[in-house]
Length: 136
Image 1 (spheres, rainbow, N blue to C red):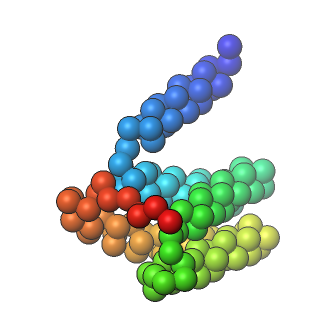
Image 2 (cartoon, rainbow, N blue to C red; image 1 turned 90 degrees about the vertical axis):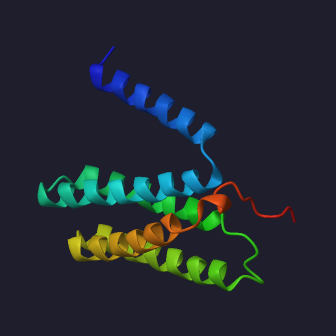
């Protein structure tokens, strides 16, 4: 077996296990960190002129942001969800442009927005970490 393939499978099992046992709060943090990691990889790929890695990394970041956007609840009545929805759409569009133009500046812009969201998310008091949205 290819050592890199084995390592990736090991990481995948570890990630799936961590996600299965994480609170909703921890899951969102994991997604935010995952998007930031993919953006960092894309920046390195641009620096090294690795077009394939850049495209794959940006594509994965877009998928993660799509997952975050899909997790938003009560868009009709919740201003925070509405604002995040618009912000995630903006990030998606900016990442698409970053991919097309190999723009580190645009990747940095999205990374800064994700860091701002992550910092806010980390400020949520511990007693709300297991809170789930009410069933519709």
